[in-house]
Length: 313
Image (cartoon, rainbow, N blue to C red; front, side, top):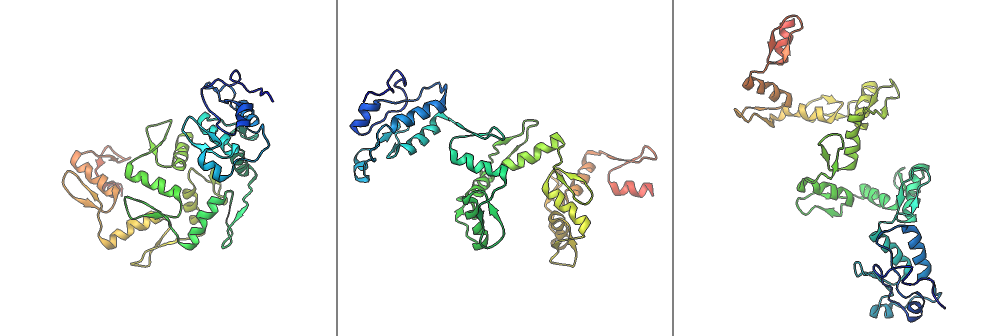
């Protein structure tokens, strides 16, 4: 049977199919054009060409001697044409599967199916130990480790370990200093995409997290969480030295220094140390003689806010 797929259809410059004689005679050499004018069309034609025979693929024993489909871009070989076609897309960057709701595109139909769950809210993977559910089975696998305590992903530079590989990748950026997510409005960059998204709201003024009790809006979810405690009176962060409790963990950390005597904020000019950052800031004014606290009743200024308050009283 003469093949309609010839060197005129696909110039000989991309992918060579080395397979059984009947496929070679029928398909000869099939390749994708470098200019990628129409990736989707090319891939569908390639798939049709590669499946021109209905015979079963070679056995594993025969495959050991000669692979059915071989990519000349990276020398990888494949026994099944379906896997071969998927692999080709990693070279062409072809994303023929488009979401009908938000126009995002994907290399594989399976990824599009998973993405559609972000629109439908479907979460088919349910935890058997709690009520959480997930859109992807891999996320459920990572979640199950929060119950078992398993942390198989270990950092090679420190003793930290993680239940999820993604968290390990993000953690490693602390060691390398890598911050791949760059803000388009300023020079700040971030280790995580989620941190960049939160930061962008400081430029746009977007406040997506609204309090259900008073309507106040917040840029970050943790700000809303802390705000809600002003309504409920909840103070979940308890001091282990005394009976004081706090709305936020950061405030508890500052309070603990009154017990431990820790002073992590050091003046580089005189060596004096402080337990709070703002105390160091005020101290630095004594070196520069900068007076930032001005009285609203007269022109007098003060180094420290407490001095201003005493003056006003």
